[in-house]
Structure formats: structure tokens, C-alpha cells
Length: 128
Image 1 (cartoon, rainbow, N blue to C red):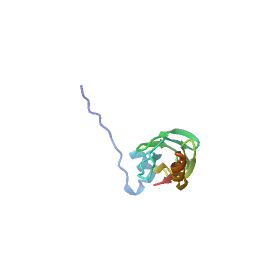
Image 2 (image 1 turned 30 degrees about the vertical axis):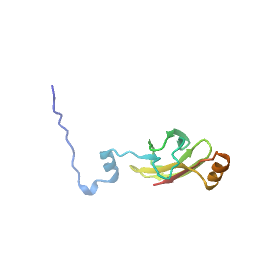
Image 3 (image 1 turned 60 degrees about the vertical axis):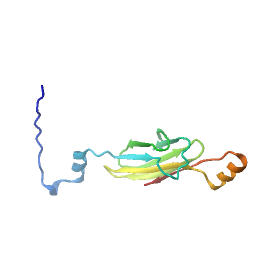
Image 4 (image 1 turned 180 degrees about the vertical axis):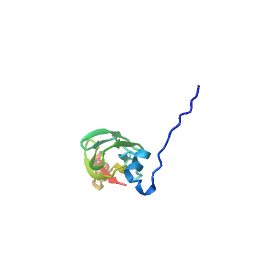
């Protein structure tokens, strides 16, 4: 048994329709999206992601994590169990800030790989 539900929508003058009403109408989520899809990534090991000191999760190459936040300034920290980088971002209401992270081998890392057969992987984080 299907029943139709009538919904009434109050139309308002466009001049009085502000940004908060628009965001509420479309239910935009304020979030930080951390992606690991750069072709310059070494594509090895997982990266631990923290937002404002709170652990968000682990991210591997080709993955992304979305974390809802309040509007304002936030710190994004990425950590690969050896090195860490921190980025501060400002998030506006309804905005989704995209951040790219990854790992890479420094110049001295190639020398270590040739002579010692081990290397270190640095971690990086940038805003897109």
C-alpha cells in the first residue's frame, strides 16, 4: 500500500535567501578530505592521519578519508611511523578542503639504498 506524502515548501524572495539557508537546504557537509593519489608517491607503507590531534585512520595509496569538522582552523598531521608533517588549514562553512599526502624517498635515500640496501621514506602533505 503506497501513500503519497504532500510536502509544502515556502518560497521566499531570492534577495533574502542567504548562504546559511542555502547550506541548510543542500545539507552541505563541512569536511577535510585527505587523499593519497599522487603519482609522485612511493606507494609503500600506510600513513596515519590525525586531525586536531585526534586519530582518523590509516590511508594506503589510492585511498581517501573524509572527516567532518566544524568551520575554522584545523591541523592535519600525517605520520608514517618514522617521520611526521603537519599542515594547518582554514575551513569555511560548507566547504570541503582537499588535502593530498604521500611518501617519498629523499636524495640521500637513493644512496642509502645503493650501499646499505635500506632507506628512509619521508612523508609530505599539501593542500590541493
